[in-house]
Image (tube, rainbow, N blue to C red; front, side, top):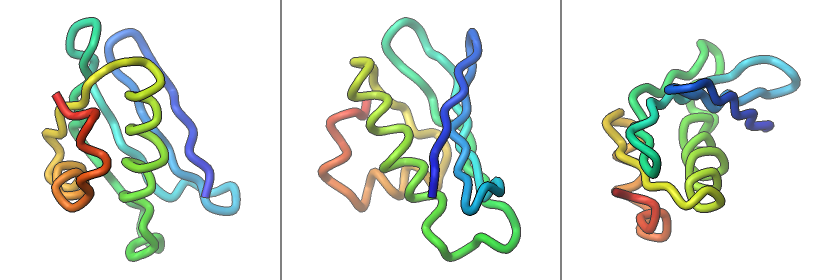
Length: 94
């Protein structure tokens, strides 16, 4: 699975690809200079149950936050559940 990040001025998206096809995405909004708000996670039909959403958090959002010294506010219920279940990821929470 490949994760790509696209950042716009006030928003961004992490997109997961499996065999070159879009499998899911996680969107966020920029909140000031040091925070992002994860607001949506979506997995494409046919890719449910493959851990796509979890990978978007663990291999997308968390490394991005750590590398850029920013904190994450997980408003998306799915993203919040991943953080709740994985204590090792919580260092990036706001």
